[in-house]
Amino acid sequence: MAEAKHPEDEDGVQIDLISAERMDGKTTMEKIRMILDGVRDNNIVILEAGLTPDEESRLIEVTMTEISPDEFNGIEIETYPKSQADDSSLLGRLMGKEETKKLTVIGPANQIETLHKDETLISALVSRK
Amino acid sequence: MGLFTELKDSISRAASTLFSEEDPKRIGIYGPPNAGKTTLANRIARDWTGDAVGPESHVPHETRRARRKEDVEIERDGKTVNIDIVDTPGVTTKVDYTEFLEHDMEKDDAVRRSREATEGVAEAMHWLREDVDGVIYVLDSTEDPFTQVNTMLIGIIESQDLPVLILANKIDLDESSVQRIRNAYPQHETTELSALEGDNMDEVYDQIAEYFG
Image: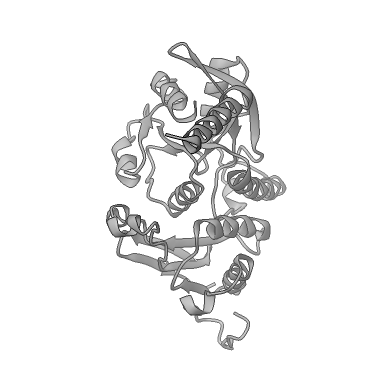
């Protein structure tokens, strides 16, 4: 992120936790830029509210255009899978909306590896550059 | 019953004529790399037109451009379903050219292949947002279906209200588990097949006719 201070010591891994409030009101491309700028600086980006399906689709597309051999291999992205409880949420269906806001972890593909994922837990191994 | 109902019926009749008789629906074949999308596209095209769609390979990202086979007429129970098949590159969030080096490729070829693969994935995403009327989602039933790419893509397809048919491919292999796919995506019907061996294709064509006809 632009205003984040990068530590002189490059051994650490920076984690940016971005609140839903900070993402609110941003356009799709502003959100994608914020995510990819962070990831390309080798940071792990955690979104409190995740992305919509359309934003995820565009994130994949923009990521592909930025992949460059020996420089950037793309991203690893994880969110909690849709739970059975969400599918049968009667109130959500009656209200005509489904809960899409789910915490999302995004990092450089060569630095983050998902060890385990289920409906309530994402366990990831983050390595240094 | 009144003017509104009659108007609605007449619009629905017009739409049905427009979409079922005149314009074949474009059905995108989507899924992760190496799920057997091109093998399936070739199987469907060969069964109903006699031609293939594109080359198949065990090396990931063999298909790096979306390829369309037009006017594939599938006959079921005396009725004809007319579709265009769009075979798309496997979708991923990362492409590392060094993985191609493991398939006896020179560095220059691997780098070129990875560049084409990234363009292909971007193209596939664009088709999904703009240019397909329905989706056949192909999964390798020997692999864990619970991946982020599958979850995201199925979410994207659902958000666009596109009809989607999930196919559990490679049932000819010992490690195949169709139930794992059914458990991962219980909101959709899953049909099993081996596109390579042609196993259970009759049921696949029945489902294509039902979903996209």
